[in-house]
Length: 601
Image (cartoon, rainbow, N blue to C red):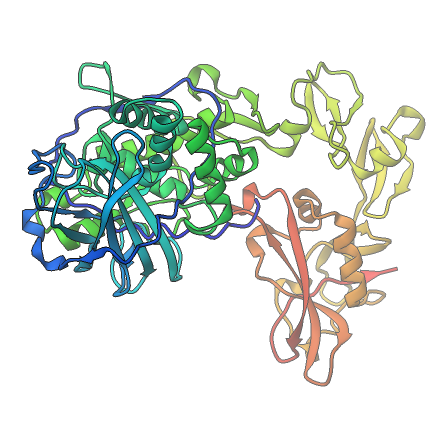
């Protein structure tokens, strides 16, 4: 797997809701076109006419449910109004501020004064006092630094960043206006649809919401199974349990795999794509997000923590309970399941795999990125340490990928995939198997070669009954009668058993039987290089993956107190599933214990 990308700063500081526990629908797959990722927009500079207001004029008790559209105290043009809500932006520090500007209803250009407000408390609550309403349409911008010092909904990276998030809303519809990832995403899209596509503001808002769901390949169904519109994103909350709220939670976690922050150039380019076309056009970015989500798929509930496997510290439930100690702050298993559904739908649709179930169990399928996946049952294979009772798509093995679509009918022949770095395979008794290095050099074992001994850089082989067998023999230690197996590898004979099945210090290391000796550091290096990093080759040498912490003495000294040892590590959480290994040599105290493998010419 590629290395983990830095999780982008979506230090989510959420929005309050009435914390209703009812689920008003389901999230299902949407057969949509291919799509991409997200980005950030910068508000206009604050002119000298910015008007500051006290953030303490609205308390948390005055905020209505952010999951439901509340009645508005809009009041009309010329009236005063307090605009308030919660901002998803991590813990705002003292310099963070909120800015409200009124917009022309035809052009969405700024009109009149800009009003300034500040945050209150640790949960992203803001308020802005407006002296005179000039339009029912406003743009709210949240700007400033964020920090990890206190609380957040989704803690993604230990860093401090400047970020800006926006919302473009009709203040005549509701009082509580939340600023979040998806209000930010839709802001410039709505402006494009109004200015250049000549849609009304309401039409533009509905279309942008529909396009946001299509980005993630989902749609919402009501309790009767009928598709319904998403509510305006300024009403979505990390505290609610409606499908709109669940989508906000899932989407925020999902997009936290984008590298960098909201000011990252990649994120900005994706935002520009969405503003112009209502979709994303960056395949490489989309692949990276989908691959990481696939690898870390399946949200889990562990105590009061909800997080995708492998992702550090996304403690949504813990955060909710810090703000609201009632039972509605707990995240139910059905909510966790729906969050997981968003992840699964996203990468399945993005890869073009469809559903994995019992009907297509063991099916191989190639994604639009030319990777091969197999529908498997996790009951027999736990992926990244997580086991599930249902089937799911998993990475195909290297052999499954290289032989994809080619039937093995029982005739002996070699194949190579289009990848020049792939390993050739031989069809034997109706099954593909990886070729031996001797077969790649001189071909199959035939009756003409029966009984012959041949050698490659890796192993020695004997031809018997039309099969090449790695040369294996044994010796009897005359000192104690113990029998040790050995093979021909890397131009030497190597013991494939540890001497006496115990460890030795440097002073005790000269224990090999007569005619045998300790390998040098160079000989260990040569062996591992010629084993090619393949698990099966390491197992042939009985370098057991469960013994990955073992060190083996070399005869090469560093100084009077240190000598070199070699060790092996396997690249899988479950060593039995490892396909490759790596090795290293390091300086080791001569007074420490290590194992011994003996060699001879």
